[in-house]
Length: 253
Length: 258
Image (cartoon, rainbow over all chains, first blue to last red; front, top):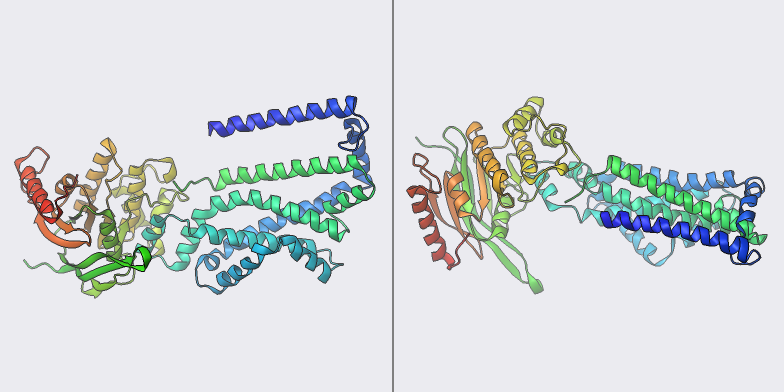
């Protein structure tokens, strides 16, 4: 624990050092270059990002797609946990067979098909993000189900608890901290896939801003949006950690 | 007075898959008969050098696992589906860390009718009345055992199986749990069957000790502890029983227990 805190402190020190280095190097020593933008230009580019690139609107689209899909998928999994966890069930086998495909075909390829099938739909991005979230969480549940402490299950079985009660009140509850932890990695995965999805599809969303900035060779817009994206993902991760510590804090020994 | 038969094991055998597809026999034709306790509860210890065989036997008794052969009969009826009448408490902590003490005990109500009274009674019996809102993961192994015991009691079983309840406990906590088991057994009409690898604990705690041979597990001898005599580690009676058990165990395999 102490080591983790020390490591986090060191990381922040490095981030501050990079920031100072960037200001010194690109504001004063190499003001004109094609590697990173000048800090003062980045500050000035906020206005253009706000009005021309419609930053708030596009960010809200992507943020809502990422986090709504995770929240809905998590609660749906929670509601259906008994069906998902119980082995030899149709849902379980069906998902296992789909899992086989996703082992070899990257998620974005499915996204390209979605764009092809429904090119004009405004909701296709939400549906795509939701399916990635749901599928990923269900697969994680399937993986975690075999790691549950045998003692919990044995004692519940001996008390006469049925399969549904054991799946929902013992196995699902037991794995919840691990599932919530996994949401941090999942949000990163969905952010990455969605940015590429929006980049290809065009129309709206963060990927659209990246595409416009590339088309206009606007290095400062690219840089600023990248930093904001990173900050939002960081805040998302901290929020998930907070919820985990507040509501799912039990350890499994 | 003839007492009714509470539990009967008829030729229980269990084989599991070993290396390279071979079958390993863990239990071999275990037969046993336990009568209902005369007044208060009774404590019976199953003593063996093999924890795995003891655990498997307890799981079969509670219908958590199925035997390869044989059957378990509880109060005259086959007990092959877990119904909460034989509650099993594993050796590692089994109280749920996501529920507080009261919710843990209430979990037993998933399977039985009622009742707040059963929960309150179980909490009182196990000395947890001041800790109803506490969570198990904040606390010691002894505390977690109390919760598991309270949950088992709330289910209203006829038999409670304890898998090496004192194994990882030391000092004061071990003494507390030891006294708790004795105390609860005197207060409620439940038979405790305790799996143990510790001779001393078994003598001090039990009314009856059943010795098991190992590889595969087989019941060998039964020793009744005379509770009218002074049973403590310094007493002559204790030493004579311990010597007898030592001799028997040595005769089975020449490997002394702890």
